[in-house]
Image 1 (tube, rainbow, N blue to C red):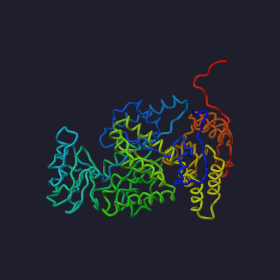
Image 2: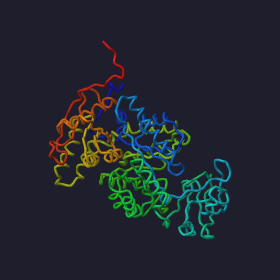
Image 3: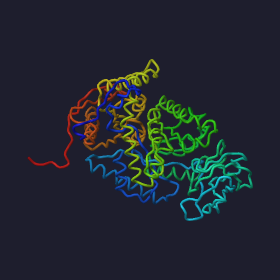
Image 4: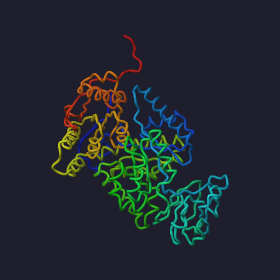
Length: 534
């Protein structure tokens, strides 16, 4: 019962080697955002509503095999599903964002010539890889189309080629002509329609940003898509080119997917230039040198630490409950992978290609249960003091107020931190402190609202000013935003009457940063959907 048993928050040291950790109370609300890829354009509104209620934070649209009309209709269904969620719970807005991914240098196979779901490729046989467009829908066990116009330039004899994440492994023997290369099948497997193709240690000569990518960006700008994922970024100039094309006013967030060894070498510059980082594990293990693929766990920790220090979101993509999304069966190694990622400081997860909504719902429920149990372990007292030690001294007044807010919230075991924000910079700084409670960020600007969706433990709310707000004083307008946030959280069941919460806000209208920390008690109760007369 939400009304009687709110989430219990403890701020204490955690010893994960102690068997008593299993008796520690778990969270009731997930802090880690999840991006779900909607691959089926025929998905119903009620199914999207179920995904939103299960915890889907960001909707990712599949752009490769959908028409413009399919995308527009899918956007409309997401809006209707969010409206239905609001009407069901009795709130004004449902915090959900949207996302698209650019094609860039991602290479795919073509369509199978037969109508079968897959064809077997036997080990030891030889086949032809071709980039001739006439072979797009004629893939067989002897000839496979790959969408790489510079195939013969990129791949030299001796290069290892992976199809379908090592489902099939080839080795290039000779370059026949500008459109074809001959390969030996080192590892056999089943070839399906449109599989990922990666080549180890290859320098792509095809353009990073194509005309199709620019069309996707135009679609994102026109229909106010919140986030754009750019994979295969080796040079910071690629990100700057996209930003220049988009412009500066209310632009979407630019998240960079790390897929290559060059991306790892330039990680500091890429983190500085992008709004967030994604470790694309569906590409990276098959693009870097063979000796480096066994260090993926170390690379994951290393990038996570750099993103945490820079205050940027760090997402994980590829291999997350892959078998569960396909067949509905859960395996221990997939569960351990998600647990280790949370312990490594990952901000969020990206679920790929959810064709079966039932399986996607089960995976979301599984991620919820894992996060409920593991997230309290990564917000311990020892970890909080280590985060404070990483801040350089002397700190300015804004950082001091932010640190005080996180300390007060942890020491009082507050349920929430409510923060009216203008630019989101204070929320970004508070994100580095990893407070144990949920941060409610209230904003009136749409681009700030989009940005805050991506941060861990942050729940953004869009405050729409009414006509009566124009005549109110600055203090009353600020109180309205805080009351709006508390009323929303009470309706959602995050807090109940009498719970403590902390506010971080400006002390006066002339203040240029949040310099006031206050402790409050929830003074309202949840409104009934049906009120019975006395």
